Image 1 (cartoon, rainbow, N blue to C red):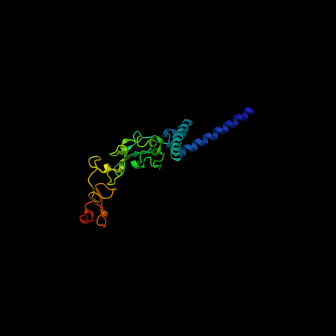
Image 2: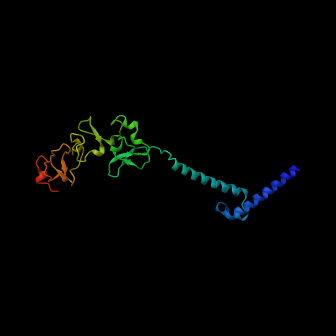
Image 3: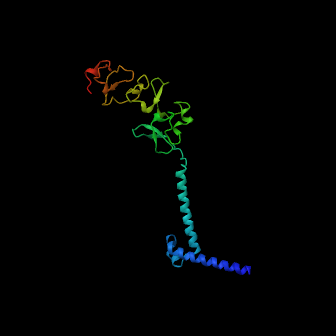
Amino acid sequence: MFLKCSFEIYELAEYHLNLWLKNWCKKGCSLFCSTDCCSKCCTRRCVCITVGVLLVLLGIALAIVFSVVFALPSQAPETRSCVTSNNYTGFLCDDRITCLLPSQVCNSVNDCGNGEDETSSLCSNLPNNLPGYLIFRCGNPSNWIYSNLKCNEINNCGDCSDESQSYASCPACGSQWWTCTPVLFQYCNCIPISLCQNGVQDCTDWSDEYVCRK
C-alpha cells in the first residue's frame, strides 16, 4: 500500500512537472534554446542550460552591485605622475582619474578618496619622501616649495630663485604684470599691473606710477 501510494505521488509530480515544462517552453524557452528544442517542448537538459545561463547573468549582476555599493578598493596605479587640467605635473589618485596639484599632497586634507595623498610613507619626512616632480629646490638647497608654486611671479622661495629665468626656467612676465625691480619683497621681477598708478611706489624706479598703464 505504501509503495503504491508513493508511486502515485511520483506520477502526479511528474505529470505536473511536464505540464509546467510545456507551458514554460511556449512562453520563454526560445530565448535560450534552439527551435528544435522548443518544437519538441523543453527537455530537462534545455531547462538546465537556461537556468545555468540565468544564474551566470545573476552572478555578474550581483558582482557589479557589490563592487559599486561597497566601493571595492582599486589597485594603486603603477606611477603617480599625471598632468593636471592647468598643465602641471601632479599626483594621480588610486581612482586613476583624479590628478592633484603638487601643493594638494601632504596638506592635511584628504583630496584623494582613499587618503593616498596623505599617507605617512609620503608625508612623514618632507620633502624627501615626495616624488621629485612634486617639489622644487630653491637656490638655498635647504628650502623647497611645491613645483606648481614656481614661476607664478610670487617670491615663494624667499630669494626669488623660484622666479628666475636662469635657475627655474621661468618665462618672462605675462601681460597682466609690469616688469620692473619691485620694492615689495613679495614680488621678484614684476608687479601685478593692477598696482600701476595707485599712488604708491611699487617699483624702485617709479615706473609703475609714471610709465605703466593699466
